[in-house]
Length: 230
Image (cartoon, rainbow, N blue to C red; front, side):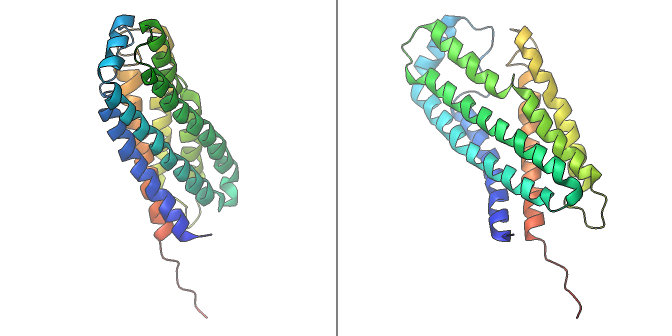
């Protein structure tokens, strides 16, 4: 166990939250393009702000490193309790899936911005596909948040790994992320991929949960060990 490595990974997760948010703002994805835009509108959006979008996407891609680091430290810390081993491994497996999805999210959107002069239909297709990686593909994110939540709430020892509030936060985050799969049936309204239920709530629920996990992991890594009596 290396406390410095754990603290560094926890802080990387927190930095990742900030960089992802900055990337979304720079790329003009906050607020996001609307699912009911025409192909011409998508083509114009990517052609007019090409360099800005590319910089924002690059920031988001770099920020995924913080997510990977955070998943590593959370899995390591949960694994220290034998009773939490199953949830720790479930978190690790779901975390690997979500990491790939976030990388694909930024990479596919990067492809949309790579050739801004392509047809509007092709640009729209790439944007839809990229957006689906982060918001339609909600189940792995739900499983991960739920696994951490259940694990934390199941840890009833004298010295739990994380505080119980983090467990409840994980459960609520899972519930808030789950409706994202419904976006497949809507082009407008709160369930569309630019709407309140499918975009805004999952975005800030996930970002807040990631920040809270980073803080909890950092505090655990930097906590002083109790002095032993001879």
